[in-house]
Length: 283
Image 1 (tube, rainbow, N blue to C red):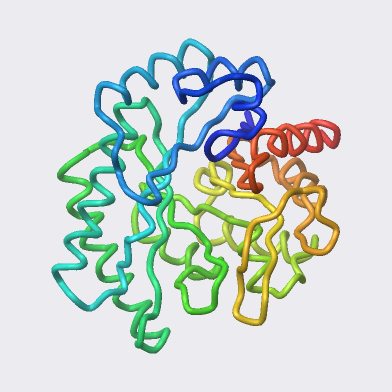
Image 2: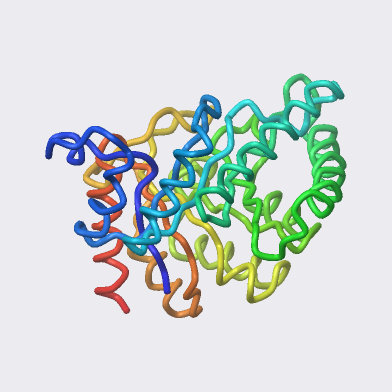
C-alpha cells in the first residue's frame, strides 16, 4: 500500500488548536493520511521516552513513521573526525527511529566541498561502505533502511544515478527520490519520460524490492542556475514538478509499497492529501 503524509506539522494542525506533536498522529488519521516524517534536520533533541510515546500513538492511529537525519552529515568529508561525527548522527537517528517504531531513515549523503565530484563521490562510497559494515554489527536487522536522498544543488552528491548506484552497496540501503530536487537539477525538465528513466534505472540496478519500497519526497521547488532555492506549494504555477505523471507511472509499474512525504512549505499535510487524492484518482 502506498502511504502519504507530511514532513513535520502543517499550519492547519496549529490553526485547529493543536500544539504538541503527540497530537499529530490522531490528527493525521482523521485527516485521511497514514505517514509522518519526523525531522532531526537541525539536531537530535527528542527524548527517548517521548519517542516511545510517539510509537504507541502512531500504532494506535495506523501511522507509519520515518525520520530525517541531521543536515550536518557529510560522508564526502576527508577529515576522519568529521566522518565519525556523521556516523554518530546516523546512529542516533536510527536509534530514535527504532524507538518510534519506524524503519526508514533519510540522509543527505554529502557535498563536494573543495574536491572534484569524482573525489567526493569516492569518499562517500568508501565511508558509506565502512558505515554499513558497522551498521550490520550494531543493528543486525533486515527491516531497517538507510535512505540516501537525491539532492537539489549541483555541489551536493545525490543525482538519481549516484543515489541508486550507492544503494547497490548494501541490502539495507533504499533510495529517497526527492523529485523536487531532481527537477531543480534538471532545471525544470522533469517530465514523464524522465520519471520513467529514474524508475527503470532503479529496477535495473536495485531490483523489485527496493524499487517498490522507494521513499519519496515531493514538493514544488523554486530553482536557479545553481539549483534549489526554496520549497513552494502544489498551487505554485511557476515551478514544478507535476505529480500526475509520476502517480500514473507508480501505478503502472506496480510500485505498491512506496512511502510519499510532502515537503510543501507550511501546508505539507494539506498537499500530502492532494497527492493521495491524485494517486487514487489515477489508480
